[in-house]
Image (tube, rainbow, N blue to C red; front, side, top):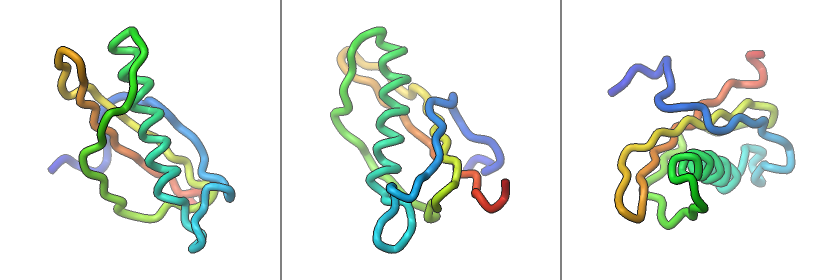
Length: 101
């Protein structure tokens, strides 16, 4: 297992979690976070393919900690595999807590 101090891949998207992105418990909705990951991986896929791309599948996702309003969410991605008609692009999400700024 890698050290948790440094993200893998290149920064593909950075945004701030807003109140409109929360679920009924006050944490950021997991679907919003998945959307950010999809946008970030799509940016890298399009840049790599130099063409239009679509997300066909996601394999596995683990939410390790809740994300709060005001937290900075940063997605890092890298191309793991390129096939004839597809790519595998893992994404890591790192969060900087708003209260620690």
